[in-house]
Length: 231
Image 1: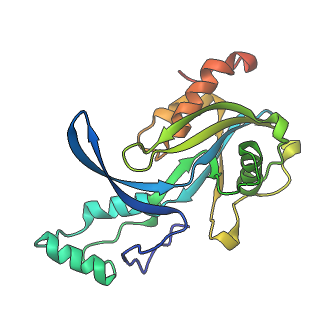
Image 2: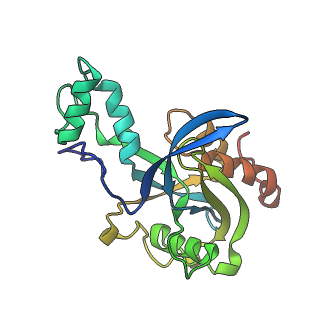
């Protein structure tokens, strides 16, 4: 998953996942404008294995994260016009050392887009847990934690977070996502007693969903298992 090469930056003229817009509006008599992306809502699932007392996360390559890191090492163009022309032509990334693919890897909750109108949020979450992590969890066993707006400056999409307890008996596959959809997902287990250290370790690239859900578990579920979460 970390062998990244043949990078090419090209204009995004169409996408099934996001659409850029510019909105003009008036706020308290002041005319304003804002650029935003229309995207799908999503679900995420904090998975806790009660057999091994560990959290089940996913680890995958995120091109957006990788490109942010690449920008840090990219030689600066003499002026913005030249840079824009380069991106318009879809020039291959060159000049300077290309970062290793590992800088684009992030630890995340199992998650997926809400893009199936005929399925409930719980049913979509159940599918994602099965596809990404290999556990078969009944919809009735999914506990809704909360929902929130993510990326409010750019997208404003809503993510709904669930909690699922699983055991080794619920494991029916290896997970890893759907290869036909280009998913390359590694299933990662974080022991409960290491969870909060993991959450606050800035050297481990992770989403805010991981940090928030670990704190939620510590506040709401830890007494049930009588195990310290290293806070």
